[in-house]
Length: 369
Image 1 (cartoon, rainbow, N blue to C red):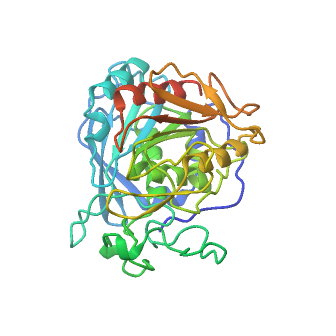
Image 2 (spheres, rainbow, N blue to C red; image 1 turned 60 degrees about the vertical axis):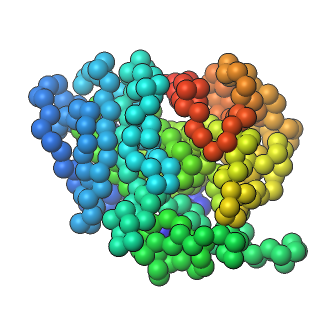
């Protein structure tokens, strides 16, 4: 189960690309070890060197595979930015990297990408690969039972109208039939371990470590900003069609907030964003009945954490992408080309739209150099 921290964390700074990683918890390193295939010798930033390929991370006897992309332009003596990309529910390590636009943009901009695989298929019932985040394992929402709202429940779904996707690993954690992700490993801890492993095997810029997630993977990325250890590691997030479950409106724990580019589809029936300026929750209409925090609500909370002026409605921001409407608040700290929190919506369903969304995500990350 993912724990959400509430204490503030000051952002760390370092003069060398590897020093920041060394400051993180020794517990992560103690739990994890990397197995790798042979790689060509060359200039090293750490003790060994990764090339593009498949690797595995051993965690408490559990082997977790991940795929690495290293651009041809990679220079082992120059720190490179890193993206950790989390696939959607039931997806795999090629969900992003198998798309030409992704590898083309990574190569052109000199980014390393790590694509891990979620847990679930290793269980007895071979459940879909998943990422666990606030509420997804217990089945409980973040605001409990509100007696002032007629028919309100404390669950993340309408149990009677939603398929039971329970994972065997969550048998002692699930509080109802709404639980739908794995409980074998702590995914936030794993994400930090992956970034640390990349820094130990490649020359990574510790100030430019980013997270992207699609659908379930996008839902998970919000917890990276809300948990003390991962908030020190990741500079910004970009969830695609992925929102927190109802009631989980916690801001990022790091002082000054965490930049976030939220991309949703106005025709999405699986994770609907809701209407602009609607601060309530939204409801799935694709056959199941899950409850999610609306896009406007979570964007406003995260914008306020970045000292944006949320006393006024967000205004339109031109990001140079046709048929995509983005809104943001002004007066923020830590902004660049665009404000640090962007709420972008396209007239699409539950799809990633990577042909336009991926270049936009990389433009967003590029402003944090």
